[in-house]
Amino acid sequence: MALKECTKREEANSYELTVSVDGETFDKAVNAVYKKQVKKINVQGFRKGKAPRRIIEKMYGTEVFYDDAMQDCYPDALYDAAKEADVKIVAVEKLEALEAGKEGFTFKATVTVEPTMEIDGYKGLEIEKKSTEVTDEMVDEEIEKVRDRNSRMVNVEDRAAEIGDTVVIDFEGYTDGEPFDGGKAEKYSLALGSGNFIPGFEEQIVGHQIGEEFTISVDFPEDYQAEELAGENAEFKINLHEIKTKELPEVDDEFVQDVSDKETLDEYKAELRETIEKRLIDEAEKDVDDQIADKLIELIEGEIPEAMYDNQVNDMIRDFDMRLRSQGMDMNTYMQYMGMDADALRDMYRSDAEKRVKLRLALQTIADKENIEVSDTDLDEEYSKMAESYKMDIEKVKAAVPADSLSEDVKVQKALELVKESANIK
Image (tube, rainbow, N blue to C red):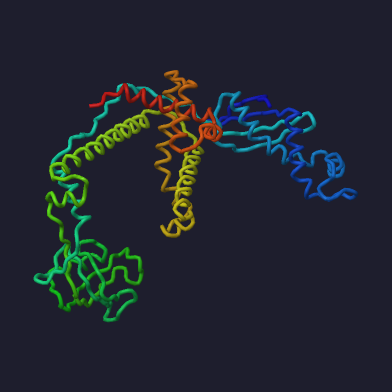
């Protein structure tokens, strides 16, 4: 297989590659197609699936297997041609066979390739690092979360309902004096202040006592999901049965012993400080990376093909689909549940896809400008990390992840480290 000609088209990042496939390679592909298809071909005088290739070609023409054989040859031939032309194909717009025979075949491919980008000013970036100081308020907030998780609901008998309480009510709703579907329930538990009901509903229960029967008036939002109720005024008859409130445990040594392996409150607070500090450090490092990414995206210059964004969206959707399947759900079910179609799903990923593509191109461009290289040792270290992470034999990882692809990933990571090391992080 060889590249015969590489011609840049007027459109940005578009090329025409004229590629030849030698006779030996093409004949192997034709023979492979023959072996797949002969099982379905009946030829008089031969058992089904046993007719020789030369007999079938004599009956149906020498070119009977050519189209399928060329289809099988295209991927490797294009890969080799692109490598020879020193371009990276991101989309194949058109394939056109020019000639084919025993000597091989020639085809023309119209392709979109990765763009040549420019970037300057990536060294010495001004980055403001988030504080990692742990305050007493942060520790207290963590303790309050633990208290909330270990709280219990107790009945209230001696006061009216308040925001933060959970009430048990019967209710029935009316519009124009007539009850409406879905507007009735008995012994319903409602957390006041949760915002789960129509605006104004929960607030009007506040101040009422157990045993009271009363009526409240609310207006359904204009964008309410049930169109027949959208914008309508409604009255609800309420019967208040119970008021419950959350009882939080006292914060003392006994509480600490119940929720942790520490003995005293001071020990527990010290442990929380360490945990919070680690989290803040991780968050600060991620924020630094995010700031660097945003600045590199602003600095990168060049015309990026739409196909690169589309490919990235496709990759992200495939990854999401795999995660859904691992949880026992498929993409169609998810879209139905969320009320979205395929276009809406793609729109959801579009912005993030653009950022990922631009950042990757920025780092690739930096790697090229800085002549960053990846050694065999670098690759071996990365393969070892992957094998350990996935609990796989390293040889299986190497078989699954091509060295060329991994080398590009390592090169990009090295470029990011270079930018980060040169940044002015305050």
